[in-house]
Image 1 (cartoon, one colour):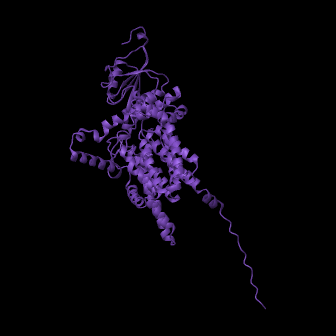
Image 2 (tube, one colour):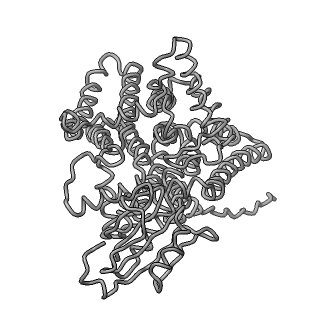
Image 3 (tube, one colour):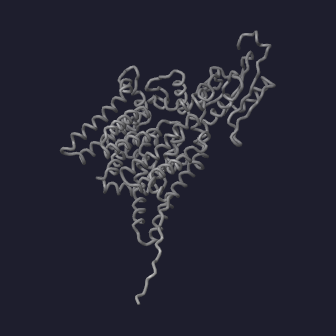
Amino acid sequence: MAATTAAVPVHETRPDPIRAFAVKHADVLFLIALTAIAAVPRLWALGEIPQGIHGDEAQVGMDAWRVLEDGWIGVYTVAALGQPAGHAYYVAPFIEILGSSALSVRLPFALAGIAAVPLAYTLFRLQASRTVAVIAALLLALSLWHIHFSRTAHWPITYPTVELAVLVFWTLAIQRGGLHWFALAGATLGLGLYTYNIYPIFVIAFTVWVVLYTLQNKRGAAFKPWATKVALAAGIAFLYGIPLFVYILTPSNEYFDHYNQYYETYSVLATPAYTEGGLADKAEIIFDQVRIWIGAYAWEGVPDLIDASSPDYSPMLDMMTLGLFVAGVGYATVNWRKTPHLLALTLLAIMPLTSLLQTNATYRGVLGLAPFVAFFAALPLAWLWQRATAQINDLYRGLGYAVVIIVITVIGYTNVHAYFDTWANSFLFPWVYTQEISEASEYLDALDDEPYVYFYSSRWPFDYETRQYLAPGFEGEDRSERFGRRHDDVIDRRRDSVFILLNPYLDRLEGIKRLYPGGTEYVGRDGDDVLFIAYHVPSDPAFLTMPPR
């Protein structure tokens, strides 16, 4: 009798819907997560750190108010030695909604900085791999360099964001061939001219890369259709740039004064030591400046009195990022024929040329390289992650993943801690971002009336941009030794007045109180530090018929 075999029930394995969704929408989920990670260090206490508001930031806000009041203000503004006016139109809606404050003028730039992170992910996802894209975007999100400039109302932060948008559209144009992608890339390239004076160096580097890419990939029959599409993009970029080109070519606008003044003031090539020195002297000066410039990123920071970068003399790149960057550059150089490597190497070779020999604003001029520093640093970590993924042994695979995660975590903690602890608590932050006059101006703006202001400061005049932006509408005069035409404490008693005393005039209060007893005193503090003193003196009816003194 034949043995019977019992049927073994077969259990159907249902796919995990959450896992299936995550796999299907991985890129979208990564974009959301990376954007959220980037947002936290760029938005946290944005109105309070840096303490105060820099004169350049205030000028951005005042240009935005000009847009709100007048509409079209042209393509260029003379504020801060002259800048393209794109930032004014961009910031205006935020000022209209939120009013004049540090937060309202910084928020649009912080959002531009945040946008760079998903754009970096998109670019490197298209050109390289998801692993490289995730790690590079994470490193950019946690970059001290990029975080710092994202938190100030300075136009340089818009530079890498627009640059990444151009490269994303151009990469989509390469891969998909649609004319609309070339048109979008060209339009974005042209609009970028209205972001920052340094932006043209990216246009040059981008052009060089396109030429190299063309020589490498578009020969023979493929050249003509490719050249036609490139010409379309270039034509649209030129079209968008025409208003600025007209401004530049109008002699009365003196567009190049900005560059000439920077060159004469801050370039080592304009110093007497260089112009009067011999060949050996010139070579030594250039070598020393290049060493200092590289050192600012690699081994010893240069405290920057324009942006308050590196107040503790620490280099801009932490040790781990620097090591990964060097390894990544080596790897990319060996594999230079790959599109993302050729692009990153081309930008790295050309974009520093604008600031390499400058002694001022060391870090802002090459901020456009920040995404590509992150890309280079991501290459060795991505290689290790991919090697770990290929491991059969669970222990080795887990160790590889752990090393990458720990390295990124340490880099993130190091940079975020450096900014919010070391940098934010340094002397340089409140000094550069003018905390004293900022707090005094905010105090004035919060008053129910607008008393006449008698202003005492050895550092700022009453009409300094920070006061004009934060407390517009006030009338006043300087009484300091440096800025005032009068240095006494005699005031016009026919109207309500307020004395605003900043360092080193705080001890002037007692004499003023003896002259005008019964006034109201307010002391503005930051912890134990006195930032300013306000002393209100009401009008005296007995003086209403007397002429002003």
